[in-house]
Length: 205
Length: 234
Image (cartoon, rainbow over all chains, first blue to last red; front, side, top):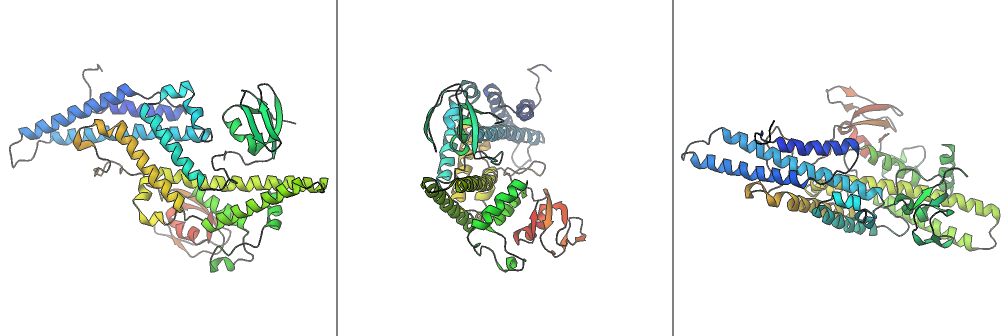
């Protein structure tokens, strides 16, 4: 189908397909600003058509049935837009929790950053502060941001340093993690560094 | 698996007498559940239930207090030069145990957080559901609902023509509602902890579960059994 002949809602379908692709491949796709804008334009056009249809209708007469089709298209497009954004927010929150709430880690990654819309960056910042407020409700004993994927089997873990991450407080005192070094440390102390990819767990011994 | 059981035993011995966190029903059991067993049950229920369940604030704070006391004791013993090697080994076990209990608490809290975020609008619009949350969770729910609305406003709604700018559309019957609500008909595996009064299945038949039975059914069918502690989700 050529671009100048388009059915109502076709762009909305494209947008939903992006969301579906994102779920199926488990990746965050780039924010499709162009498509979102085109749909918003379509919405304005549809609204105008409705208004003109109603204006043409003589008083005391029901508007032509075509209005229902326009109205349905409007509602559908709007839902597609909201669903697309909502789906992205879900993904962003997953991303946020996957790195243990390390927001700078997400925002400083140029690849991820380029996929976000400016509003989404704002959203992540507000979400982060909201999550931090919630975390503050718990005592220092319990960090609710830490990983919940695998229950701990051992207190200590043997790790390899993949990226320099500076001086870290551990129960053995402070350690300056330099690339290539290996340590046996308490898991709870450095778990967040594993999550963020600074350290790598070495299995065995 | 045996490892885990050992851990549990270790904690049971060190646990203070379980607080009377639950009502008369609990007394009918042969023995009372330890706080950890109770927490594990609530954690499992929360993980499997589509709805958010009542918060267990008293239980959670007593467990957190206990964890704090344990950690303090561990710190003191570790710093004490007269602690023997054998005791050091035991301290390690206690520490691991603490980490494992923390894991459950964390997972429990995060499961609730996930539901709160997913159903934020639903929660803020229903005073009944809000009674199931802690104050902190309620705050988070309303913050989150506003945050999402704001994002929708900035990204989509404010660019649309005026009549389309609302989030609370009355949608025609063929469209799903605007608000995400929990699906109470979600299938769950339910394990009877005691002989349960009969429940009515969606097709109208009655179903009675004896102690120890496991059934697969809609959450809404057994919701009240879970709430009363007569059954647990597995």
